Length: 334
Image (cartoon, rainbow, N blue to C red; front, side, top):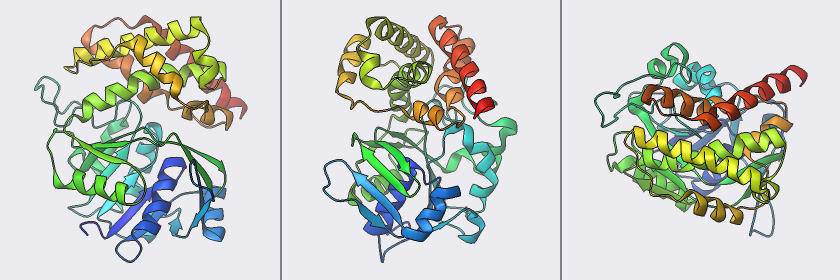
């Protein structure tokens, strides 16, 4: 066992599910802990973390060490973050307390990640830091992009009440080194996920995976928040489908400008999306709960990279402006 001390930092929907499954699946081999907060943490401590899983007859309760103070946990071999992009900078100091020189950090993120240009094969962009995602370079300095294992998740989940998580639409968690290498660490983490009842997969093309998922996230998440609609109504409205298709094409064009050419037919992608269960996107979940929206990494950075590459993205710009205003008003009245 390479990783004997494992912490999941941000034990919300997906992070909490990973913490629960690791605590049970690796019992006796690894010390698994979680960093959470509020009522969710209180219920985890009192009654454990309950996982309701599609295809599993009975919910399962998992007991694990949980805290809101990462300093209590000590140095870890592996840290997995379940935080959204806009939450990471504020957590940087807490995350740093968990690190020793060889600690690896798996960051499960939607959209463009703060470390995106670390190890980029294009020397014109390699090492570029993204201020909007990492103000003042805090993550770059305290965590370090060299520790990062990128992760793109196609696993759906929602905290249905404090201490209870519903897992659905079971798909892959794709892991990759920023420099595209085939490391033993990504193979090990993928194997741990598979062993514990999730689906882990290693890749040597994590940037392509980031843009592939971002085509969906940039289209579905903001539009679902603006309309407060679940997936089925969005995909049944021809005008909305056309708008989401325009967003996808613009995202695809920006990816190509940075050397990632996606062999994806947008119309087919939209058609395939009809197979997604009629669920609330993560951004809609956050909106309804009065939480800040994950809009900068999902759409704002598409616009920023488009500016850098002189790629026109008019539909993304309009959607972003509307969603930013929605986010501000929602937080003001929450």
